[in-house]
Image (tube, rainbow, N blue to C red; front, top):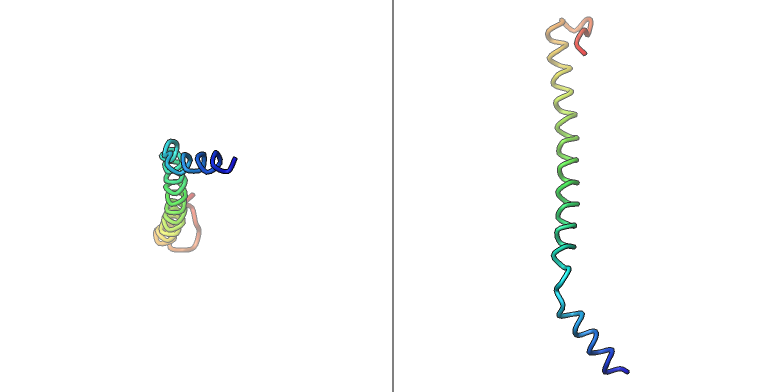
Length: 66
């Protein structure tokens, strides 16, 4: 029984099939997470710059820019 179990464990250890799918999944999740974080930060910065430009064009009194 023990010999059969050890043989199975050795075969699982040397079997690389399916590993690439997991690696691609991890890489995809990482890329999406970094992309969403970068776009969120960039969107906040752009919004602040647009608000500043709108205030400068209207004299800072009434915001007519959307």
